[in-house]
Amino acid sequence: MARQIKKVYFPMTRLAELAARDGGVTRAMAIESAMQSIDSMRPQADAEIESSISAIESVAAEQRRGLSEEGLRAILRYGDQIVTLAGTFGYEALDHATKSLCDLADGMLRAGMRDIAPVLVHVQTIRLMAPGGPTLQTTDTEMMLEELAKVLKFFDFGSLASAATEAGPMEESL
Image (cartoon, rainbow, N blue to C red; front, side, top):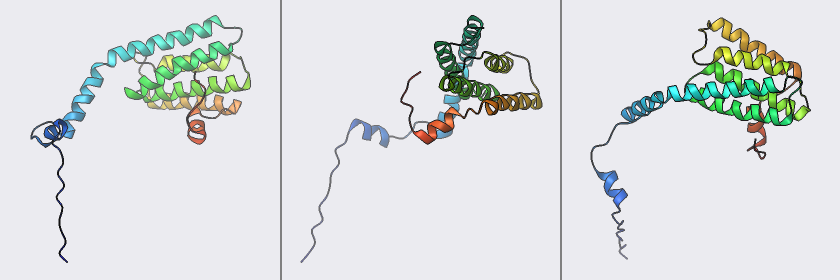
């Protein structure tokens, strides 16, 4: 018995027509264009980073006698903004220092701690690493980040990033 071949016809949609056309941009050109677009937003990002750092400093100044739960949550919110922008715009040291502050604030929340001193150390370091701040040598930056890590180790606070990876998505919103 002879096998019959059936033909399948796909409808021509607008998307299929566009995909079949010649032209467009190469992957490299698209990436370069995207990077230029992101770089054009750097001044706005730097201003937002500055605003978030100032907001954290204000929270710390208002609560010199001890941080409230609300104050720690505010630090986490502003810290998250800084981490997002620092990561996007390649401010690696600032990103690392701010993640450390977020780990500290989260650990303090969970432990019921209210001490302002370790927060101030982190905020001062973040201020030094912010865009427009002093130019730091790599060794100085590494030393400051190591000292922040010692603070977290002293309090035995883990990393929010590693905890999120182990536990899955966070259920509680900041």
